[in-house]
Length: 356
Image 1: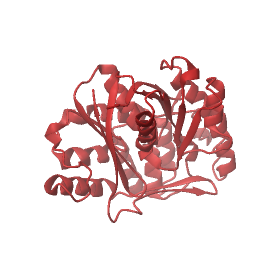
Image 2 (image 1 turned 90 degrees about the vertical axis):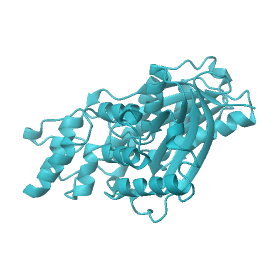
Image 3 (image 1 turned 180 degrees about the vertical axis):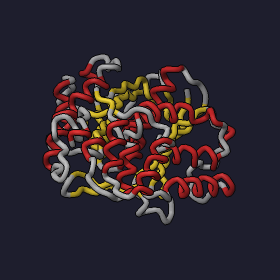
């Protein structure tokens, strides 16, 4: 039987660490002392030390959000200006990530799968990347768009099916997110709290039938009941508007507990016992999300160490995040049976089994 493998993963982030400056800016949007105190507590407990962006932080004491003045108080840019920035920077970051993996002969790449929810253009990143990498004009291109933080899994699933259908297929999968393009000027606490989480990043992976790296075993998509409005991501006049309910961790924990006890319910674990899983690649959507998974499944603290390290070093990079976790596992030579898990709007849980 043909077993598709992730042969290699390359990752890249922009040059500017914006975590502390963006947290400081978020505080200035909250006029109420008690609300600022809550924001400060959440920032301290976030488990994040670094996030990266193409925006160079400005001087808050001079009223600057970023050094270029792209985000001007009272005049945050419209969606078109943000998409122009995406078009400019996305290809640069994608090329940095792909340069870190050995694609072999570019002429042998048969499929290009792009996952992104933070920017769009046509012709877009898929065409730009194919041209820059000298991929064949016949390369089959697929864009997985606007599926949020869970999109890495459908992108890998597309590659999985391509390789199963044709053992000669070599699929380049790219997850590219420029989340910091969509910073908002608002005093809504839930929105401002997102300033604690999101950063920019790109992961590029080569998937083929060559038996090296991470073996992909099977995939499952599950809609968690009564959760549709908990994560939303909509195109607004001033960028894309994120809603991330504080109920998300609790709903994930509830679904996992039901699944573990009944073997049915949400189907997230598909009858697997957590004790049978050696490696957990859980999307680092935030510290509370990781805590919810760990507690609901009764995992030891070390089980999610790779996910927590990615959160600490990079924040939540939407669809790229779980790929950064898998890249850490490859780098440290982790072995065993694995489960990957990511959550996105819907609220959808995307999972797959893997082996090292």
